[in-house]
Length: 303
Image 1 (cartoon, rainbow, N blue to C red):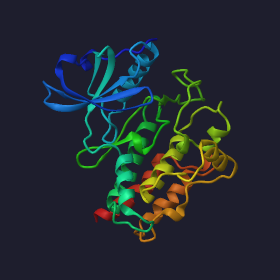
Image 2 (image 1 turned 180 degrees about the horizontal axis):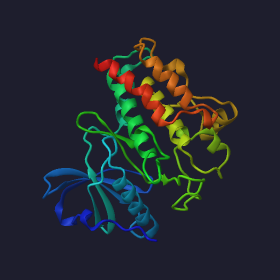
Image 3 (image 1 turned 45 degrees about the horizontal axis):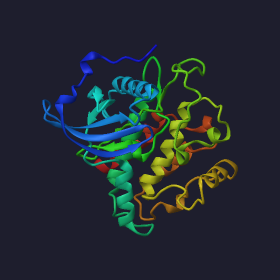
């Protein structure tokens, strides 16, 4: 059946003003606007094409998933515009601090050489890791069907005014049936993930069905980026080089890039990270297990 949305989420285009372009990615274009009646800034995510029904359907499906996933560390859905410049659009809170990716890039440039921990405070790094783990644990624990993100990366982790995590972009996510390996939306032919964050077993077998261990592997790469402030596989010649090294060579981002002057609490995150990117998917922990590590580490900085 075609996806439908709750009428109460409808937002009138006339209520939107001061519209400006932010960026684009995948099939989506993102704008910033002010909602006149709400008196707040919002972000609008639109389908790229005005004449692609499949893109509009994908946007509706993403809206449904966002509406189901109401949690502290998940970007909330505020509404839906049926005719924004001849497109449908999701209405979400505007995140002025941008993405985790942007922050890590800026701090990485400021840090210069490996071993400099001053560019991004360790309590904040550990909070990012813990909040991402909590957000993903919530998605994987949804009933009756867990929600797999399948494109977890720093670009899809936004930051609010106080630098708290808001996981976003559910365009590739899938509902997982509790029993068996059936996928409720039947979109098994669609590609998912971004190369450095895709587990080797999926690079090796394109017919493999997504599993919660996919997100756990992606989480490990994100943790590495938070700890190092660098980009994974930055020295690779091309994407084929990355695939060959990850699949055939069983390579992962180097732990040698993690600052030497890190606090001892970070060592627990390193051990967790390496278990999350294990070549054997069955050996990777669940996000529930991850929280048992990330929460005490973050709390250690609060005490």
